[in-house]
Length: 84
Image 1 (cartoon, rainbow, N blue to C red):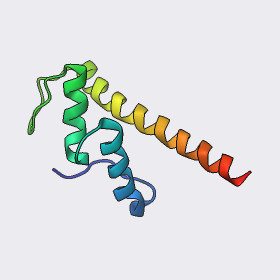
Image 2 (cartoon, one colour):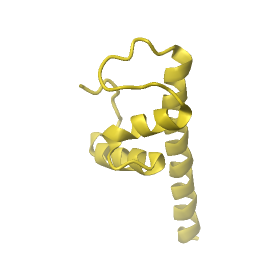
Image 3 (cartoon, rainbow, N blue to C red):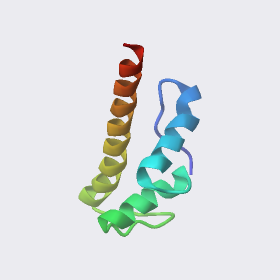
């Protein structure tokens, strides 16, 4: 499936994918959303998921996005601490 989102720094794609897998405790970034969906009790499957409600889809995306942002903030804080 083609990616629909566009990141500002294309070179960061691999790092972001690795972070996504890390925060979802998945083996690969492709499995991350399925791991998150399973944790949230959302019936996500490979392929078409038109039966999902907006709330269910948002739970999965919010879980991944929120976890990634928290981890990035933590990394930035650690970087700032090291510089001082």
